[in-house]
Length: 458
Ligand code: SAH
Image (cartoon, rainbow, N blue to C red):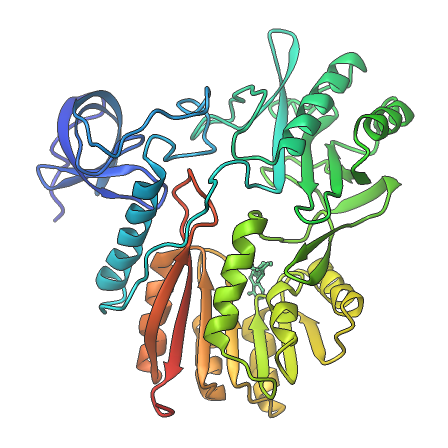
């Protein structure tokens, strides 16, 4: 039988912070019991109050830092302590990178059961203002329209005027939309009562093109003063190329509803990574840090080591970004992705870039890949870039049956990466190296690129 936790909710306890959790919180042990404490630094000693006590772990808030670590730094954002957006602004950037690397190494040792070379994290020269996309909910506070991210673990909006990791233009758009909603008296959506109109605004700015997309997410089709909204936003933002209304009338935490309508302009914005151009629509996944996306994709290209004659599969391809980035150096490329709208964009992107040796299919990778295998497709390189939960075992089995010389695994969650690496190791692949890339400075997220090669080949 499991032991009872050694302390209760509300208790005040002292802890030594020894590790770093996936969400950026510090981790310590209290009489063997694991406790997560946000906004602390490994190496610190802290006095905390337990806020959550579960059977196997607890959470605590930091009351006092008894021993400060030299890596601690003054957070730059005025709402950092209450907003849920960033988790590690209180740690110097160099130390953030080192903690992320350590976390990846720990996952490979603990979950993967293997020691692998993990390179120092490739970080940014300027780790601020990097995000090309913002999606912000609206609320009403003291009779005024508020917009900002939710405080951690709540649906309480932390009203903000600027977000220091957002592209400057995204901030300006959010401020303007907030002002307009106030002036035009647009009813703000109330999620408790499920009434009102304006739910969220989503903004996307193309880093290389400067083009901007604004999506007003509304509960139902009505948008009072529609024409006024269009005129004002067009006048204020010459960079605006696409103004959309997303219709979302369900009770749900998902930001976007199923249907988009063009209010003005195009239904996509364009952006470039290297010399490849991409059309991006509201529902499509597109990496949010364009500067580091280039670094990430160059790393993928390096590990793919293409010479022009290869067949490549890009599984979980989104709008075809990696597939098209690699296609310049491959004979044949296949991409598969589960969101049909993204595949529509991917096909359009292949046309824009005049790449007719690339085929895209919509569907679950674990269903399409076995069919490709049966059809006799034998890739030299397989790239996978799954969501946080990692790859389906059926997909990994199929990849191994295809016997590519190289597997390049892009991952936003190093614990599922390590798990899948272990699985592939049992199927005859060996981890050569892992290169973390810092796609999300100031937050706890770590992105990795891993190279595995077929043991038989080398
Ligand atoms: N490689 C792309 C996208 C990576 S994000 C890029 O760099 O931009 C992961 C993608 O996997 C998302 O687009 C998501 O829609 C897709 N996805 C999730 N589950 C999937 C599945 N079972 N099969 C195929 N694609 C899936």
